[in-house]
Image 1: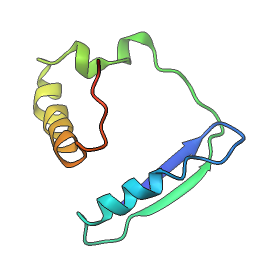
Image 2 (image 1 turned 90 degrees about the vertical axis):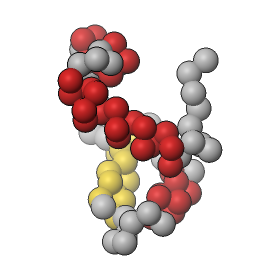
Image 3 (image 1 turned 30 degrees about the vertical axis):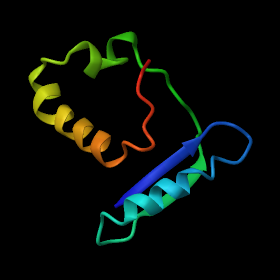
Length: 85
């Protein structure tokens, strides 16, 4: 598994991510390779795409593709996930 982390600030990216990667590594047989680099440009999504899953829970794509992935993430990382208030 390969992941990319980008940051836009001039300071160092959060070191805390390393802990999550080490925790996730236990679930995979191949090493997780992570590249951390400064973000060149960041574009804010149009309003239509913001919170798409929350706004469209009965959309077939959301139900068949996104919901199982969200459920798996919530189950595996429940100790570190902060729920909405």
